[in-house]
Image 1 (cartoon, helix red, strand yellow):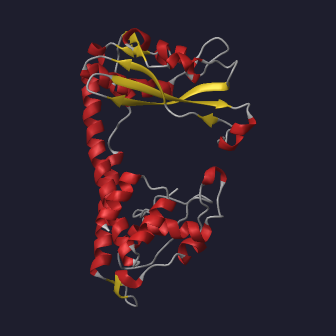
Image 2: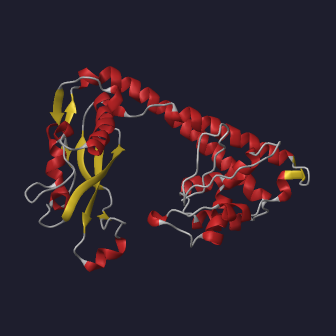
Image 3: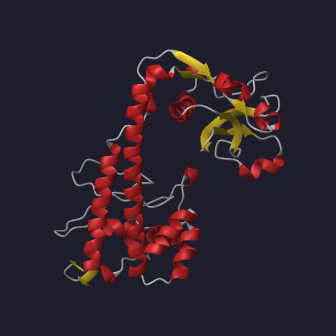
Length: 317
């Protein structure tokens, strides 16, 4: 987990015990540069080094005022620390913190709940009717039932696209009986599989978009919605469940699908801007604390930063 800080400019929020801490300030100067520092990967790393043992259930960090107040803040953001006069770099950090705040606020106004765009529709084809089985699916764990896997259920869906087809991949969860798997249990006693190729769709572009949007939403909702349930039984496998999932008729939801995709694209662009600004802040903070490139790589690796993000931060460093 990463430290996440925000400025409560209107006094609306109160911190909860353990994972959230409110720190009141009486200061006539902008606190935005501090906000940027606290949201940086470097200060997350420092916090973990100092207080990594203070964790709660689920791996969340226990955060209190003494911990936050003891995090070292570099004097490089000031020209005169006694008067809190910010340097040009401090001012730049504050500007980026405000930009990040504005972008995130704009993102919260975008509705990407696909179900809200559907309206009334008739049932169309099931996934079984319009798909081709993925290679070796007959040997997959997904053909098993609760006779073999206790608590067996579908977890998440993802997709891969090529010029001709759309490939649906599924991860599943179950309670293992084999002691060799006990080290991989989550806090609920389940183990999660990798994503497994299930079926391919050789359909038009609009139908591909409908499948990509509707199937994850239906899996998330489940409970019989779209003729789909997440769990296997003694006689019904997870593959059987997926085959039964029924799509809406494309013509009935075409307009809603178009609006949803527009909002999704708008949200994607905002997320890219957020990540870009976040990486700029990280690069500036690494420079402020006078770290070498090797030290930056070590820190990013210890935080399990994705390779594409690590490369982008190093490029800006």
